[in-house]
Length: 185
Image (cartoon, rainbow, N blue to C red; front, side, top):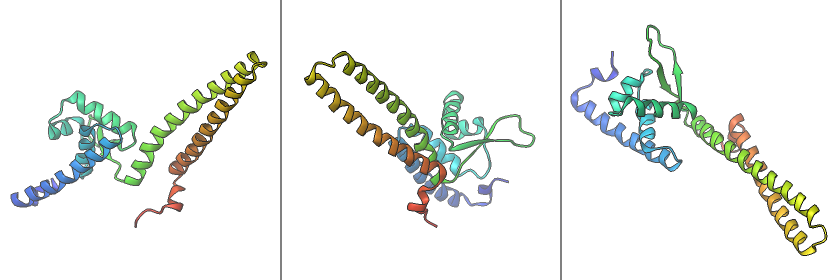
């Protein structure tokens, strides 16, 4: 039985308004982090569901096409914000929200930051190798060597930042961050 069936029309309306405000807030918050508003609204709607839902059900609830819904679900799944679950007697994929907002935050940023760290460290590493080659090629040009040394030092500073960020990501993934900034109980 649907949990809302036992409520009066007035109660359902008031609850819907309250939930809509939260859903809108979730959507705006996720939009700040580069997730589309509609995907934020999708997560917000799923957050209030008591049972896992299908693509069809969410498509109907949100008034979105199945293609858009599928893309949204895949995005949320890739970000580890929803799980695909098995439902007895259902031949369709069912999805449920991961309600742990701390874990959602940690997963979201870990995924995004880890990718950026890897790409940026690789680019910086290639640049350091190119600088070493240039140093050999222009060994007699002290002015150019001085510029190359300065650039290498700046790149090393950037690499140190990305190594720190990598440790920060590790602290999110392991949960050690909560030793320093505990969750509210």
